[in-house]
Amino acid sequence: MDWLNAIVQGILLGGLYALFAAGLSLIFGVMRLVNVAHGDFIVLAAFLALVVTQSTGLHPFMTFIFVIPLMAGLGYALQRGLLNQTLGHAILPPLLVTFGLSVILQNGLLEIFSADNQKMDAGPIETMSLTVAEGLNIGVMPLAVFVIAIGVITSLQWMFYGTALGRAFRATSDNQQIAQLMGLNNRHIFGLAMALALVVVAIAGIFLGMRTSFDPSVGPGRLIFGFEAVIIGGLGNLWGTLIGGILLGVSQNIGAQINPGWQLLAGHLTFLVVLAVRPRGLFPKVDG
Amino acid sequence: MPEPVLLQTHDLVARYGDFQALFGIDFSVSAGEVVAVIGANGAGKSTLMKAIIGLLPSPAGSVLYHAKPIGDLAAHEITHLGMTLVPEGRQLFPSLSVEENLVIGGQMNRPGPWSVAAVYDLFPVLKQRRHQPSTSLSGGQQQMVAIGRALMSNPDLILFDEVSLGLAPIIINDIYAALPRIIEQGMSAVIVEQDISRALAVSDRAYCLQEGRISLEGPSGCLTRAAVNHAYFGV
Ligand SMILES: Nc1ncnc2c1ncn2[C@@H]1O[C@H](COP(=O)(O)OP(=O)(O)OP(=O)(O)O)[C@@H](O)[C@H]1O
Ligand SMILES: [Mg+2]
Image (cartoon, rainbow over all chains, first blue to last red; front, side, top):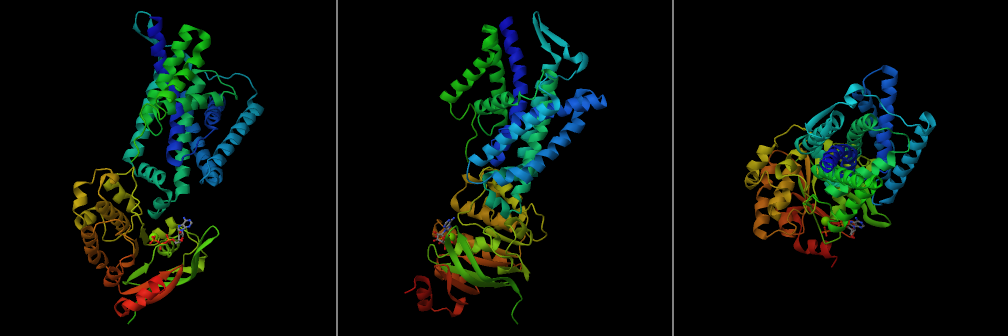
């Protein structure tokens, strides 16, 4: 039963990892940008949510009313004001600039909030659980995160393949010059993509802040989990990203079951094995 | 009575880095006119199209459209003014289905006669393939999608860059057969074409480019074979 428990909890943890990963995947898909500061933006969103609950008394769940528009606006402004200038034929400038952003965010948060561990109090829901079978309990909170992750990925999938904005994202990703001939301003399109990615980041940050404790330094770790989930699942495939997150979560929990110190190692090993056996991930997008 | 000038370039130059591809081009298209651009490989025909549509930067006053300077505008701004390009090599969006390629061409919502239904009417074969990935079509069908996608923006001026490239002669005939129905609504067109006789046959006026300069210009019916050969090959 311990093993089954580890696997089930791992699956639910995978939902959180998929939330970390979805924004990363979206940005890479639309503009081939690897956002090294992605994890730090998740942490920034968690701190924003913390400030909102503390100053308004809102339940952490409800902080999205403020955190989502703030992060979306930040994403659009950041893309138009800074990141668009780094995009071109070279791969290095966006990496360097987002790495710089990562350093700035971590130190800025450290300056304001100190290195103390923070956690948002979600109230009784934190300890609620459903007993599925004898010895197998599912926490309501992890389950909620998992359901939200599926909801987010379903919405993104629909947005990409069922809306005019998604069509514009795909066209711009295919060919920026030709997309301009359709009247699409790719700088604006990229701004919208970053805004959308930071909406997902806002959701991820809020749940990060409720599920676990956090401090200004945990961003890069979230980036790694998100990155591994994207690569395991296959670039450009959102459902693949969810499965990647689940595999990562399950591996980590099985590793921890064997030896508590092996949790992270087991996740990284799974990532390396997938990378070695299927370098393009388990479900790569077929190139047209 | 000459029609008003729709598009005009003044001393237009274009560069790729240090390499200069166009040298002082004066080019014009009147309302309702079909203008051919011929020239050997590398003469600068595609470069001229890209400079006009805004994919290559130029000073504001070097391109006038509807008498307004547009040289410094970006391509997405120029397309909003009612000009579009059917790019060389078709360049469909591989992630989009046939129909999505058409729909995105019309996303500016410019009013006019062209709609998805009108394009299917012009190229009926596309209707059966509307939900297929655009890359699964034959070359000729892909060219039809590229033309339809450009028409969807209901432009006043449409630039065709070598629509016959890599297609079988019979398919090329099909494509050119659609031209009268495209321009009958009053749309002006620029046709870049390697096939000199076809270019002269479908156009009112023609320009010949040679190494980035205009080497010959005149009404298509009046250009003699010898003059064209000389302008084309420089012999
Ligand atoms: N992206 C580019 N970078 C550098 N040089 C280029 C580029 N595109 C074209 N050129 C050069 O500019 C010149 C004109 O090219 P262009 O494509 O306009 O010719 P073209 O008349 O369209 O030829 P074709 O009939 O082969 O299509 C050529 O010498 C070409 O090598
Ligand atoms: Mg060309």
